[in-house]
Length: 92
Length: 302
Image 1 (cartoon, rainbow over the protein chains, first blue to last red):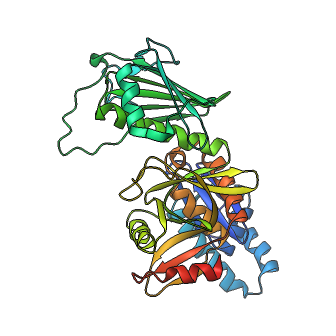
Image 2: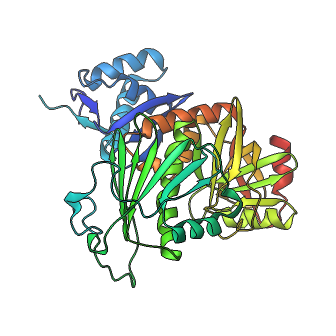
Image 3: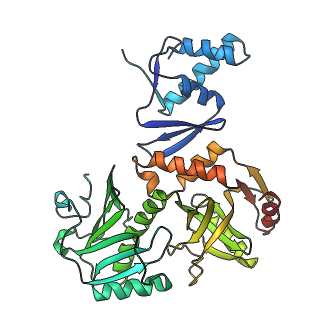
């Protein structure tokens, strides 16, 4: 995964905002997972069309954090979401 | 393994619709949240066994949910040596129905246009009959409660003069312990395993269900109680109530809502109902020790 990767949410997952948290419901395993504010915002933005770099552009306007650190945090977080199967890389 | 292959000799012949020869011509009504439930097509023995099992809950009523019981042949089912065997029902979910297969029975819950049930069995009566009926019936009740905006919840329910307190969590979270401590303090345990949360207008009510755990098997006490507080159990030292953010509350409750939380076609509806519930009631996390003093912490926050 790098800044040019385009991600989409896992097809078996349903996502909702509940106040400040994101709740992801995985239909295939009947699990409900909670993600923090950053995770919720990322899941809001992931649409299967936007590269991670463009997601970072959006977040840079919302969070007062150094660009390089934001990129590292977002990549690390998305790696984790991919590892647990909540997002997958979009294939061309 | 395909659906029902563990239990049925010919799983492809699972009935497509509620039809067949009834076991008999007797009927009983069970008065429970979401009901009354009418069970019809019972043999005399099946009817008397259910009446004995459910006692005061059996009384003639105007039924809102109907369950038909049909006779099945012994040869319809696979012989299973149950020694050392872990029993799990086989469920098959579709948008408009649920199919269930188990030991000596197959069953169906129709969800559209109205909820209704059907059960086929070769068991004529006795404990095997009441157990298989209950294995099916509690699934049907879970769907019915969800349909009405409620939920069946793995939880300990405790009632006092002010209403009911519900403590939820998985096995080992402390439900039986907190129920025992509550009982020792003079409160009444509804169930230490499963309780019904249901609505009467804007009011959330808690009812004891006949599917009790170790505690709460005392007869009676089936009336509805106003919900005072809903707490996720957490092991810890001391007695402390902490806020439970809404997202985490919905996720935790969802994992404790049996049967319907395994249905991919109902998860969204379940999450909707839980989100409504979380916004309407006092909810938190309770850490407690064995002193029984957690009640003071609850009263300060409820």
